[in-house]
Image (cartoon, rainbow, N blue to C red; front, top):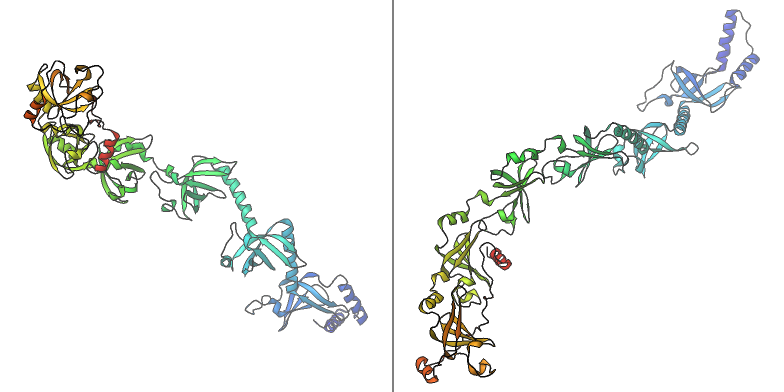
Length: 593
């Protein structure tokens, strides 16, 4: 406070010098009351700094008396004075006494008052405010916007942040969403401003986006099925299938969060605010020249990218892959597990076997890049050649014989003997036995060779036919008795049928009462069919040998074969076919291989 007495002295001196009438004390009191009649405690007024003392700053607010403000209210954190005489400042009237001329002012309270007014106006208008984050507090952040305000953690960003302490010291912009001046309570939301900015940016982006155009965006998130790219207020999806023309294991192999990438707009749904993007569409489709670069039969090199149960995928170039089916991995082995043959990253040589550009498929062969042992074998052997091999496996319908490494042949049961009925191949050959056979059929394309053992054995039928003719009488032994006739063995492996109509008997007497198995009989040949290997016999008018003659000739009656003969019909065993074996044969071939 400046003493009013000094003022009076100055006024009186000035009056004397100017020749004016001096002012009395009563007149001075009236002037001071008049000057203070419009000033109230709590008002914020603008004044000018007129002097600075060790303890106060003197401020003239336009009245007869200057006011005093504590010097500490004009110093910074380092204790340095921030004002000088002549500066204009806002101050709040804390106390004044018109009678004694006392006027006490506060700059801090004036600043706070002004801040509250500005904040209230910003709250009502929805204007953003700026402030500095002070610290992390329970549930959010404390922010200095002129007063201490609270920013909830859920409203700091678009997505909840777990590291709110990282915002300490940062300057942020937010909107006041709750304002209570009486309780000095201010609540902020930074999220609201961000959402408004994004919504505005999204609208501008959707307006300018066009399908087919190339745009630049920032990788925002990476998932298993694709990449989300921020195009400016709106996220577009780059699906994993549109990243590369080739195989993509995971999108992270091509991008990382924060990358700036150029993409092609494939589709825009403005109603649902969805944008589909493409990355590979920026480059030429490698399949457009596949047919010319990889003709069928061409031998090429590639790298294995993936091995599955049914084969292996091989990359020939960026975006072009082919499949080696499991059946095309080896000439000599039936590969059941491709992983035992190939591994990812392995360099291989393959041959193109099929090209389908429309379905984007390339069929490759690993085995065709190597010499084919079957073709080599076929070049050195012909049908009718005798070969030697080892029995590797026995099935119900035949025996598999390894002729050379990787080359097997099949001896069907029907090719093991000329006339003998064979129930199982083990009756003729054993596993591991070395045998000789004749090639009777060869299919190199399907890798099948048919062998025959009986071709190396005497043909009992041919021998019998060469030494007998229709009308000859021959002796034989009853091997089986049926309701329709007798089966008679005429020689080793040669059997004929005497129909019941060709047997002399009384009435309807059954044959089992007239003959027994092993009994010697004399018959006449009435039919001889070498093609079907059938012999028809007759007992009519043929005198039968006496028992004594039988015993003298044979000494001992032979026992009948255990295998019962049936009515003349093809043997019920699987028939062998070079071009198409039964399912059982194929299954056995796979198991054997």
